[in-house]
Image 1 (tube, rainbow, N blue to C red):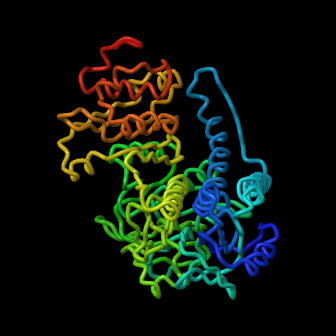
Image 2: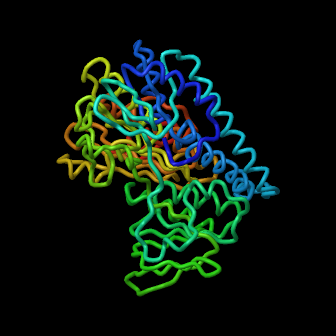
Image 3: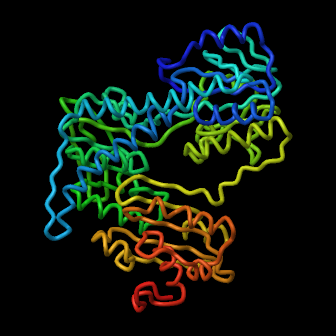
Length: 485
């Protein structure tokens, strides 16, 4: 469930009619995005009769306005960059240009429509025990009120997603700012763009627009990707600087105004400065969609950041009511939303026996070089009480990077000193995303860095860098021959 108008649902009125005749269900799922579908399908597979309640475009954030459209646009921009970067190979010349923005956007929209149809709308007929109901939902005792229809269910799962968070900058209400939704639907590219926020959305879309030919400046209060290792943030900033992307960090937002263009006043240690651009993209995170759900009437508590508070079994403070996905305000990744929703459905129908575990949760930021992380940072491990040892390996020691003539990035491993158990892995590399799952598996099974360093890895792959990074706990890998050790 989100704040978009319905424009894609097949015969929602049919589901509403069924609901009028058949008002009682085993489970009601409020929200028809990835988490909602995961919960509903899990429950249906257990034999439950499910009411899946959606309001807005079916499929939620990821397929419609998030992962799918952003990643296809990032890939498109990458082709332009690769042509420009081809000269790193002597004797190679390449050219590429953006010829028709509208055609590119139309192709993006077509992909979104195809996936929404195939992965959401067309799935409903395959599960006859799921009844889709369209309308605004409000939780009440014993079920859910959907507009004027009472849906009775002993168990409820809330999966209503999130929306773009807008920072409290003086004057922002009078500025025609873009969120990621509007930015991914622009009719034309601006000449310059100011990106407020150095988190995942800000860095991904900022680089994408820069590679499309827009002059981009990213401004943030601390640093790029503040949750990542400092070495990773610094490496990403260096890569951005090489592409001409401006980064203004360590500031406080003061005022913003629109006068032909956007003017953002920021304060820093060296004084006050004004940043100007044609457009501004607000990318300061997301907030849970909880408004109008009637949570306060049922004493369902929220967290300090506004998400629905849940325990390890996805239970809210109201017996029989569970929540999963972005609406909880934690781990805002589509795969974690689907995972949490599955856990919630299993617990709602089988008893509270399944615990949510994010210990080996991989994260990927689709910049170039890509950022990938799993487990704890060095600082987080120390704060958790571990005595740690960490090693950092520059990509200049990874044969794959040397062969590709692209050594932007590094690999950092964090281990518990006494046990040698791997606690965290942090990668920034052009192909880093596809390497992180190896580290996730290592953390999941409690692998020691010695064992990781002794494993067989294929030569001339980025993931081989994990082996080399693990070996740095015991030796100087610069003194090894190819494939040695």
